[in-house]
Image 1: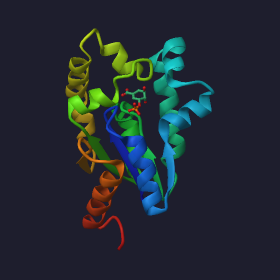
Image 2 (image 1 turned 90 degrees about the vertical axis):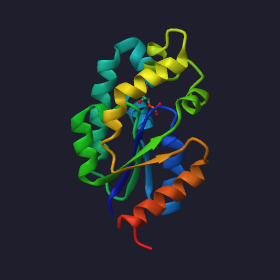
Image 3 (image 1 turned 60 degrees about the horizontal axis):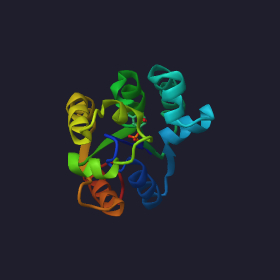
Image 4 (image 1 turned 30 degrees about the horizontal axis):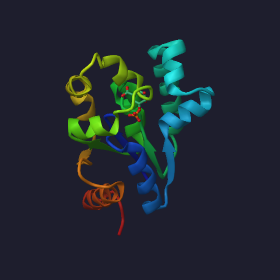
Length: 176
Ligand code: S3P
């Protein structure tokens, strides 16, 4: 069975949906950010702060190389994972790529806490919504590499899960 790879901007629910989807389908769940933090023994904000973004992206690539070869897993990526074309081709080799989306205002509500998302904090010079809109625009083309997208704005992870399952069945990627 193929992997199901969740991509999308920060705050679109990749981790919570990934966990729910893995339970629904009886697949293993891998959260890439958590995998990177465990392998490095430090948090992502610490990595950005003490070693810089390039260091984090290198650890992210290593993590993708390690998890992309698994089978029958749900893999939640970080918001910037698909900026790297090698990550995309590795993850697509054995996976269906699903993009989660949300309105900028919804993303703002879900990512209002500072100190957890260094890329967004770095872009935020006072107007966080504007920072989100700018980054979304910049990243549109990377998220467009998904096989299909699901909007998570007004729905729970369970409902998003059902929509993904329906779409996968319609595409012949899931039995039943
Ligand atoms: C990032 C998103 C984060 C994490 C890192 C960089 C990004 O993941 O990988 O802080 O560049 O968008 P989430 O999308 O899970 O917040």
